Structures are given as structure tokens and as C-alpha cells.
Image 1 (cartoon, rainbow, N blue to C red):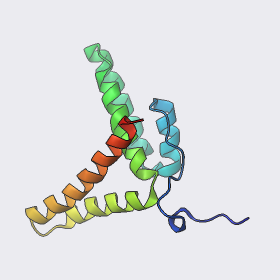
Image 2 (cartoon, rainbow, N blue to C red; image 1 turned 135 degrees about the vertical axis):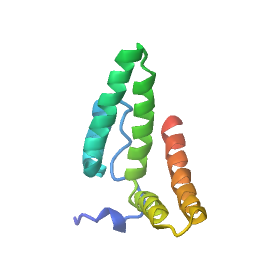
Image 3 (cartoon, helix red, strand yellow; image 1 turned 90 degrees about the vertical axis):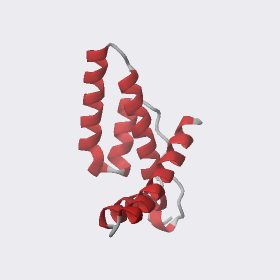
Image 4 (cartoon, rainbow, N blue to C red; image 1 turned 180 degrees about the horizontal axis):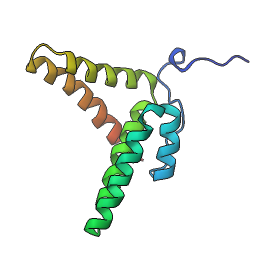
Length: 120
């Protein structure tokens, strides 16, 4: 049996959707977007510090929601490419209007991912 490269198998998920826990999201990030691990660790540490400072778990929940959406994007090769391309093109845009158009594409992808993970 041959192993197919994910890009040749459509846009099915590369891994199952992880639970919305710090350890599960970090493990998923290590597989689908290892380059983001330092940012994940930094965001998680910041959220924990804010939770302690404010006596509220709201920052932790917000961090987990955000990273769940990002991992959802990265779980799908085609979706991740479209998201990153839109972000990249926004940075190269010749005008503010062009940048807004590309950022709107990225925002829509992010919103769809956030909705997918919140509707579990």
C-alpha cells in the first residue's frame, strides 16, 4: 500500500480534530504547523499569566478558542495554503483597499474554522 501526500488527497484533514486542551492543541500544532509552536507556547504562557493576574479563566478560554481555529485551518492543506496566501498577499498589497480584500479572505477562512470548532 502506498502513502499519498496530503496535497494529492484533496482537502481532507491531515489529523483528527484535537480536543480543546492545551496539551492536545500543542500536540496537533507540532504535527500540522510545527513552525507555530513557539508562538503557541508564548500565547499559552501569556494567557495563563493573565488568568492568574485577573483571577479569571477567560484569557485561557480565549487562547484555546483562537488556537483551535488556527489548528483547524492547518489541518486542511488547501485551506491553510489559501489562508497563508491571503495573509501574504495582504502584506504585498499596493493599496490599502487591496490589502483589505486579501485580509477579508483570511478573516472568512478564520471565521469558518472558528465556527467549525465551536460547533463540535
